[in-house]
Amino acid sequence: MMALLMDTRLLMRKLKDLRSLTPRRNRVKEKWAATRPKYPPTTLALQHFDATYSIQLGQLWPSVRVALLSEKKYGALLNNFSYDDVLADLQAQGSRDFISDTDTQAQPCLEHKSADGVEEESSVDAVKKSDLSGQQLSPLQLSLNIKCAVFPRGDITRFKSARPDMFGLLSYYLMDAASVLPCLALDVQEGHSVLDLCAAPGGKTLALLQTQAIRFLCANDASVSRTLRLRRVLHSYVPKEVLTAEKLRITSFDGTKWGEIERNTFDRVLVDVPCTADRHSLMEDDNNIFSKSRTGERRGLPQVQLELLLAGIEAACPGGEIVYSTCTLSQIQNLRVVEQAICLAGENHGIRLEVVNLQPLTHMFKKTFHFAPDLELGEMVIPHLAANFGPIYMCKLKRLT
Image 1 (spheres, helix red, strand yellow):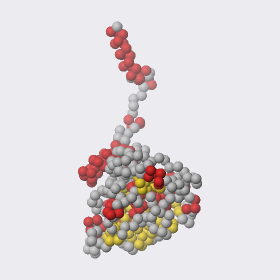
Image 2 (image 1 turned 90 degrees about the vertical axis):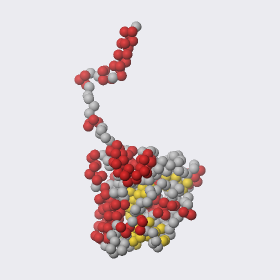
Image 3 (image 1 turned 45 degrees about the vertical axis):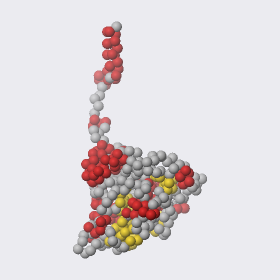
Image 4 (image 1 turned 135 degrees about the vertical axis):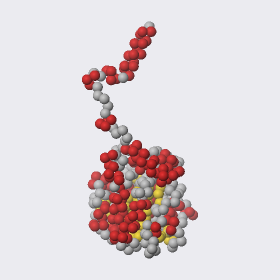
């Protein structure tokens, strides 16, 4: 009986090791290099962020890190072109339009500061937010008619997929609600011509069209495949009469060369540049900028971002406004790019710029988003478990000459 038990245990051990059932000549040792990387891109991204953001964000980094590694929260950008009015239905589910539901008592005034500064002062030093106090104040203005529903802080309810109306147009577009903020900050008004320099996949372009105030919109993206996706998004949400050549142009040009194509043309320019896309880099191995094969591309991002912002500045007409935005926490890709662009625009192109203080946005929408404190330049939504939007960085410039 004891011998039978021992034989059974030996047989079970062999069955667990299926290789024992495979002829020796057919057994293949697993090869790491041929099957999967020892350190996948998501792991490399987390190591990089731990090394850099722990210094940049200090005590904020542990909570931001947890939020970045958790499921992100979505907003529903309402489609004003849709026949269905779904806002009441979404509100009945517990969501609210965060743009109209603001603390108006907490709104300060919008501040401007010349990036030119005094003659002995460098233009970079002149744009620090700490120097913005005591300037002439003007009221905050946001882009018209944009609505975006979100669930309250701490509520992780998901929106259902939108359904087409009687004309086949979808009633809302699911996106990171923080991505709407650069479009609001752009302050699109009636009759404006607008350039979206890096438009794909189309969420911000769609948000700009919701203003129904744009005289002409140019939506550009250097990637042809991403431009095709942009077209599909617009055709799913916007009626054909708005997509005419007189009102909309979709292109696939190199955005860094836009200053050579159209200069001093647009009232408003959105420069939503490619970046390390921190949340995507931590969650998805596919198309990850931290893949070893894309190391050179990642290291070259700040230069590309600088060239894109300079091209956007050139494309704006004197008096026009430019919003620069990313979806990364990186200082090198955010305020350092803006600082360099302000210097080079003056030195190489003779363009004087004014930095617009966007701090009023942090007061208006503090009920919805978690903002980084005390940035030198621009504003940034940082992920937080109770409000897991972002990251989104934005800085607004006004062209004076």
